[in-house]
Image 1 (cartoon, rainbow, N blue to C red):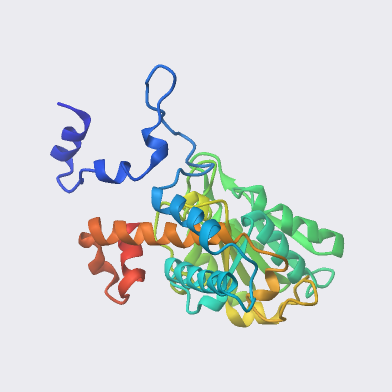
Image 2: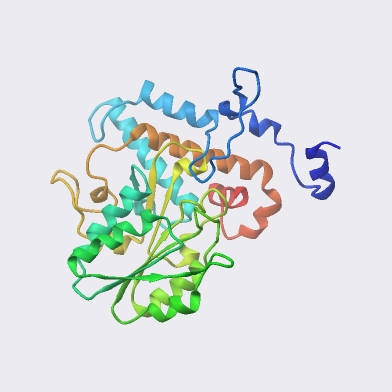
Length: 321
């Protein structure tokens, strides 16, 4: 019995994914001996479907311009960015597209936000990070030690690679201003209880910053249900181009003083996107979200009932993941 047939015996609901694989040009490639490539680089990124490639190419062919100009290609660029913000808001179930910030990657976005938050901190204020996190969610916060900020580390249990939650809670105190934690570990895949950590952060009057880069391709994300204040992910982890995305609670983003050039408007999300954005990457990001929504529409009907409170693309995205 072949592998796919075996899976159908064990899991009758497993669909035939031939048509899905056919959408990925990378999966059609072979080496010099005609053998197909096999990709094991999931923790580092994903291949992309043809629809994402087409979106990037189409932008460069038909809309290549800078923003806010009084001519067709610039207007089209503005529209694509606006639509992409809404697509990512749907992906994360964010209340508003104005809470979506685009950047080169999660690491750069985190340094951007950490510097802005650093302007509000005082010597002796505390930030909590975990030893289970990628350094991209540690180094930007540890850099604030030069301002006199105290960084405290949560350890993990080596036996099962889970966070020491009792020790975690004990570290939270009256000087805690921010907690940075990963949704899932890049190294070992541990999924952390971010909702509970969000409750602890709220009780302490601290902000919660969630690195969802490794979780985003594997499970549905709902920033409202989590109760966090920031969540960051990377589109190249879920079938898109190399673009980073940050969601922040609007009232929090509004309070932060961003490092920016003077022509950029002093409001979210613009003030965190100083300089020219990766417009073609943002077009591809929207296509990646639409690809996942299509997967949810075609294959996720059995899961859609779990998200009856959502409609349209938001519901399809949750069903897909």
